[in-house]
Image (cartoon, rainbow, N blue to C red):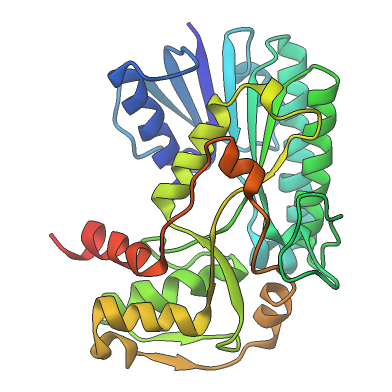
Length: 321
């Protein structure tokens, strides 16, 4: 039976990728045929469907990986990672999971002989240093955080395994996802959801960076659609360098708060205060705020129209019942 593996399938994005893949199969619109999906994560996958198998384990365990990735594996979505804040706090864990785990997963794919389509989620954190206002596709990476370093290494590894014919790679540098539901996570950019999510739920929130900080953002729905689209695009259309700057919106933190006011009202905006955090600002402030995404758009990737719609998307799905 042909299968797709999703690392991090128990998480917010991973579970939504799984749900979208199943929806496409039910509609008969899937590009890559498959029979089942395997979620590999430390926690269970919330998608309840007989075609989904939830395996609890770590991508740092080569035994599990070689057991799961077989000649019948047609696709791998590698979403599992120690996030930016957690990586900065625990260097060894970041190296073990984000670098060694990615290599182990690639080796499992290589050993299977299947040459699966391999979607790897990278990050804006691979950039740093002096950058142009709009980052072109060919700008060299210069990470200024541990997370950025391991993601940059991951990009090179995945691209090399693709060049050698072991996998068919699609490397997606995702924008910061906003608005995520649930509790804050260890990402340095977690506030980009918190300053919208918490006030809409009647709770206070704090902005840890200057209000003129530009953010490159995507709604969860658009990010998931782009990840699945990356899986569906033919590798020949991507060329030899498989890295894509996934489309997003450039919005300053001030503009995010203005959208919060328009969608949630002044009472929501009044719950947000400003308390600068130099640790977070040092990480987030090194990330670019705009990209040239003409090639991804030509390949069929999409971006949100405006941040008001992004805020409304969260409100309508998680606040309005």
